[in-house]
Length: 409
Image 1: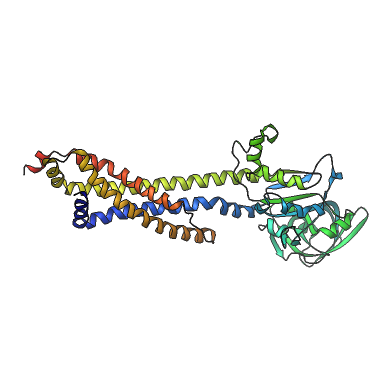
Image 2: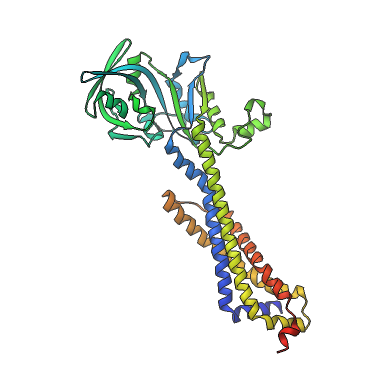
């Protein structure tokens, strides 16, 4: 009997059924898309944020190394537990120098670094590292150095020396000098504009510090810091330490790197790490809020459609009550209709949501996104929640109908 009543209800009211189905499907689709993106947004946004600079700094420890790190230890950075989270790194060797060009002399900093360096890493074929990878926001007018005697110069230092690309600069330090051909002028808006950047091996020879570096900047994908991540590892229990070590906090990744670099101290660059963590948390909160709002709007649309449907079916409901139908039987009919519609809407919403998530991912991140399997039950549950929430008020109205009042005409 119940099946026949449901069948007749669907056949007699196709427009009302379609509006309810459409409301549920759209709500489920938007929720599925937002939740699918939220599952990937932290990773993709972290990749995007890596273009704003390194978030870990490795320096010589106070007790060891004689104020330098060993260049031969650098490939070990890509062998740590979190090696796949490390997107790039580059070393620096600094020295105070006097720069001479065109009759002018100015003091500044000469910095040896890698621009693009191909490393042989154990377990991998090759690893490309260097400043071009971790600082893509540098604006270079000209080109990057390719030969040992080529360099790029900061915009402020170039202005003081009154030189540009194609000029020659003699770099004078205690114990020697080196002539560089300037092939580019770099603008960063920071302290880098007061430096001359040259190949690391050349600066090592100039400063007579072969095989040594002053510091290393590391760019790593990390998760936002929470209260647990901010705890002091030395105060943790064994289980807490394992959990902390196996979570990609910026502090645990820094600890990983410190363990393989002899005589080093690795520390997060907090102004970058904190800003990234706060931004990722806010993005996830926004996605969750949008999901809730989408489901709420869908439930409101379902409620409105059902209210109109209940008004049309008042004589039918009154007649059922008059011939003996109780509250449970009437509720079963209307809830059964809604759940069937919500099941169809949930499946359609999942399929539409996957396409919507793919479209958003391509538009915003220029990449594809894989919908995880857990989104399917999530879409179905979302559809059921929308249907039930939207049915509460109309069903209450239906149960309050008085047969005598409705049928007396």
